[in-house]
Length: 101
Image (spheres, helix red, strand yellow):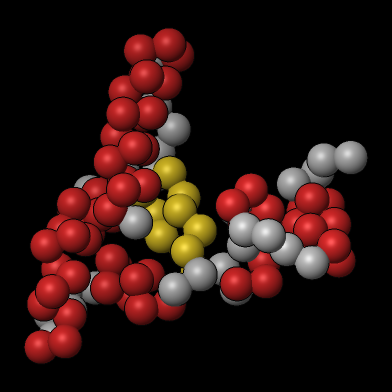
């Protein structure tokens, strides 16, 4: 999420330069419920301290309305189509969700 947030900051600047009308909030579909919870809440537990530094930027972007984190089930994660080897049935299902032929 921290890498995606940094990429979105750059991409948003590019889009703003081209169209001068930023698209906000940018929705990040995440299949990890803990990441979504931590990004939306000011939760700092003993076991989450090591990830607080990495997600601090993402939490700030959520707080300021730049991004919005939403949970999506692993089976509905369309990004998996592009970065994971999938069984044919799952590949075809996700391809149909992308509205590709």
